[in-house]
Amino acid sequence: MSEALEKMSGIDRLPLFPLPLVMLPNEILPLHIFEDRYQQMLRDVEATNKMFGVLLFEPVEDFIERPPVGTIGCVAEVRDSDVLEDGRANIVTLGVVRFRLIDYIDAGEPYLVGDVEFFEDDEADDNGAEPLADEVFGLFGRIAKAAFKMSGGRGRLPDIHRGDAEQLSFLVTAAFNFENELKYELLETTSTAERLERLRDILKKMVGQMEESADIHAVSKTNGHSKKKLDI
Image 1 (tube, rainbow, N blue to C red):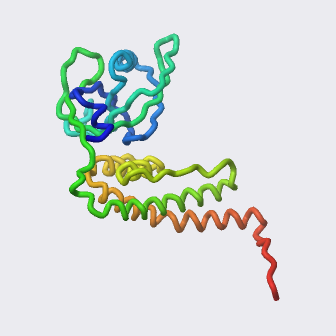
Image 2 (cartoon, rainbow, N blue to C red; image 1 turned 90 degrees about the horizontal axis):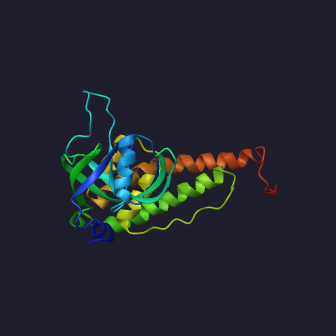
Image 3 (cartoon, one colour; image 1 turned 60 degrees about the vertical axis):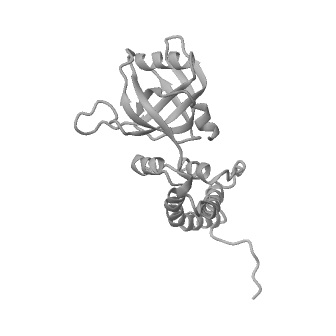
C-alpha cells in the first residue's frame, strides 16, 4: 500500500468541495473560503484529519445542483490556513490521492458529504511506463528550458525531479494550463502508461514550437544579429 493510501486508511467518507477545476495528486491548490457552509467545513476538517474532497463541478446544463455519483475527485489536505476575523480563510492544500464518489451521505451538515473509495493506478496495466516516463521527462525538461530562455533567463531554472512514473505523470499534467475536460480525462485514467502516452503526444507537439519561439526571442534581443564572427 502506498503512503498516500495509508494516509486514508480507515476513512470512507469525506466532506466535499465542488469547484470548477480539476485537482491532481501532489498538486498545490490555494483556496479562499468565504461561504458559511465551507467555513464550517474547514472548521470541521481542521478539528479532525484536515482532509476534504475536491470535485469538478461546472453546473452549466440540466440545472444539476451537485456533481453526479461516480465523479472522480482528489483528496485535498490542508497544509496551511489563515482564518480572518470575519470567518473567511485563505488556505493552502495539497492533493493526496484520487477517489470515486460512491454516494452522498446525509450527515446533517450544511456542506456535501460523500461515501467514497480511494484508488491509484493499476500496476498490472503499466508495462512500459518507465521508458515512457523517461521520454516525457526529457520533453518536459526541454519545454522548461525553452520557457526559461523566453523569459530572458531571469531567476533560476528550477530543478525538476523525475519521481516515479505515476507521480511524474501528474506533475507534468499540473504544470500546464490544460482545459478541465483533458485534465479530468488524465485524472480518471488508471493506467500510468496510457496517461504518459497521452502526455508524450501533447508535449511532442509543443516542444518544437516552444524551442523555435525561444530561439526567435533570443535573436530579437540582439536586434536580429548574431554575436558570432564569420570567416569569409
